[in-house]
Each structure stands twice: as C-alpha cells, then as structure tokens.
Image 1 (tube, rainbow, N blue to C red):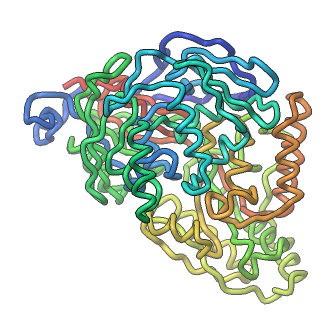
Image 2 (cartoon, helix red, strand yellow):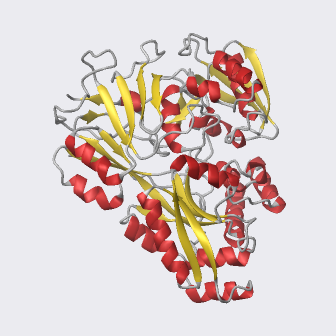
Image 3 (cartoon, rainbow, N blue to C red):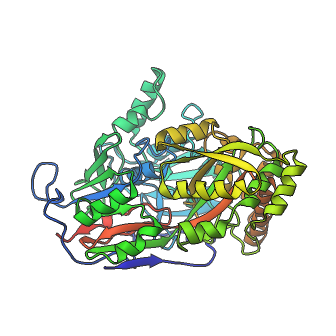
Length: 539
C-alpha cells in the first residue's frame, strides 16, 4: 500500500513565470503500487467489448452540467476538466505551466498576450484558434449566459485577435493574477460549433449550456460517451489528442452516494478509486491489503453560510454569535480526525492573500449569548441548517446543532440531494447552509469575489451579501500592484469579513481518496481534480 501526501507550506504568490514553454511536467509523487482487482470487475472490457484498460471511479455526487462555463460544482468540474482544456494549468505544486497556450507575457501594464498551440483540434474537428478563445471568453461574460464563473474574467475589457494563434486580453486595470484566473478549470475552451448551436437553442427558450451538455466538444484527452443521470458518466480516450494520449481506454465515474458502499466497492474490486474518503475510514483502508490512501493539502474552504436577507441573519450580531458558538477544533479533530486545519478566513496558505496574522474565531458561548441578547434574541430562536447528502457535512451540521443549542438556538437539519441542494442555495431558500469552495486560482481575489461580491449574488454569493464598502475594498486590492501592500489589504478585508460574518469559516480539509494498488500515476491537483491522463492500470 502507498500513502501519498502533498503538504506544501508557504504562501503562494501572485507572481507568474513569463514565457513558459514545453510540455506538462510529470508529478513528483503519486499513488503507485502493485496488485490485482477481483476478476468480477468489468475493468478489462472497453466500449467495444474488446480487451482494454477501463478505469472506474466511485464518486459521491452526480454532475450538474457538462459545460465548464455554466457549472459551478466540483463533481461537474471533474468531468469538464478532462473534456475541456484551459490555456494554462497548475502543476501539483500550484505552479503555472503551459497547456493550450505555449507562452504568455504582459506586453503592457493592462495587456496580456498569449501564444497558442497550432496543432490542436476539438473533438468535433473544429480548429482551435485565437478567434475561438475570443468566442469562449465573450460567452462567459455574456449576461444572457449568466455564467457563475464570469467573476474570474470580468476584469477583461477586450479580447483582441492578433493572428490565428496569438490573442491579447486588455484588462480594465493592470491585473497580475489574470493567468492564474485563466488556469481555473471553468475557463475551459469549448468548440465554436457547440457554442453557436447552444446560442441557437437558447433562442428557443432552452437554458444556457443545454446543447453543450448534450454534445460536449473540447480539446481534452478524453471525449464524452454517455451520462446516465444519477448513475454514471463514461468518457473514452481521445485518439486524436494533440499531446500524449491517455493511458486508459475509458473512464467511468460511477455515482455511489453512500460512503461505506463506496469503500466496499473498492475492497471488492468493483471500482479502482473512491472519492471522497471520510477521515474516519482512512485507517481501515490503510490496513486493507491491495488498497492505498491518497491524501493531499487542499486549496479549499468549508463554511457555514448565512442568508443575510432572512431574519434573524440580517443582523450581524446574530451571525457573529452563531460563528462564535461553533467549535472548529472539534470539527477538525472529531470529523476530519486531524486531517485539516481550522480556518481564519476564506483562504489558506495555498493562496496569495493568506496571512498568519489573522486568528480563527474562538468558541465562546457567553460572548455569543451576549451578542444574541443585544440583537433582541435573549431567549434564542428556531432556524434550519441545510446540507447535502455528504456524511462529512451532515456531521458538521450535527456538531453545529449541538453548539447552537448551548446559546438557545434550536436548529433543525435539512438534508437535500446534491442537485436540488445547489438550486435551493442559489435561490436563497436555506437560512443557513454548509458548503465548500475550491480556491483554484491561487489568489484571494477569486474566492472573495465568488462568495461575497454584490455582482455574484445567486451565482456563488449564497449569503446574498450586498456591501458597497466591501466591493470597493476588493476592487482596490485587485488593482494594487505592490504585493506587500496588496497582502495587507487582504488582511483588512478578512478582518472585515469576520466582523460582518456573512459566513462562519470552518476549516480547510485535506483531499482524501482511496486507490487500488492496480492504479499507477494517480494524482489530484489542489482543487481535488483528478489528472486522468496520467493514470494507467497494472492489471
């Protein structure tokens, strides 16, 4: 068995390497071992019924859309990142490297120029060009599409095509993190033919992404085969991929909501990888022959969000009281079994903007009761905590429920299926909700905007925070070019968030996955996205 860990420390800076070129580097570590799956699995039969390597991953939740611009959940991101590719990407150490762009540089203070690969075609045969990049960015920014990821690129004022394989982005202000934002998996490039067809069905009243989700066409190492909602998603190797081909013939992401069922299927050989693994199941897997545990530090935040438009959470004293009642250390020690760290704000040390000067909110029942009394709730109140069908989040809800009872707040728990849960949260139905966010750009600008900026209400800002002073603070931090000053600004912004408390920041978890010893070359990036092209099976 192999236990692979990535525990990089230190602050990730917003500075980027200019003029990078070459192929993606191999990961330094991976979950690699030997062994055999039980003969009952179909892992050696490809889509044509012939012998082949067919990777099966047991996942907790189904996807929502096979459209990187419209989806806003990690399960969809897992699939989208294998079908669609970005201009640049992160390696395992959160360093930028080329992908569809071979090199890039800031040619002016507010102009970034990207040189594109010339040998890339989409799955439907369309050519990848600078015009296609322009079309994709403009689609993300199109208000009719209402992309929840527009916040990543809304600093772009113009996209100029210099030639077939050179594109320039003109930003409204000098913006050093732009390459990091373009590395986010949601800025994947979609075929121009698919985009045009999607606009056509939008004119007939269909929602954005309807056509693209049914006919996904990216440039990635895997192509779409089928999606049986609630059951499985099947991808197959792109034989015409511009780079080195994937090592497995097909990948099936099998939806297995129950934690123990996923573990059982890994043990019996029905699946090769399971994600996620509850920290409480780690020791069991580590002591199971033929199975390893993959664990790495996560660019992620788990939080309890408040709907600031619903009473009593329209009062900051109530929100701070709830935040102060929570025992974050108990969550990390009891639920995560130590495989994470308490959060002082939205970002951890994988992101620029993190500061050790910010202290996590400490549990203090008496102070929390005093705040409730000042807000007019001396006798407490009744409310609800909403969560999806994740064992970890349900455990968080139960711990929070017990803590809140100590200050007179009676909170019932509502558990909702993943897709319906996302819809409910975006529409503002829950008074309190438990969610997480991938910190996938390496810079605090993205999570701060995504979760709390006024422009993103209902598109990630599920707290419905509308605060002009906060928005202005984010803008000033975005345009500041001095990194030391910018870091100090994010300290101030984090303190402001702790004071206004649109959410209670809980912890930064580890990514934990179970991996069969058959699997070689497996690794996940800090957002938890599998690097499927690197995987091979030792049957």
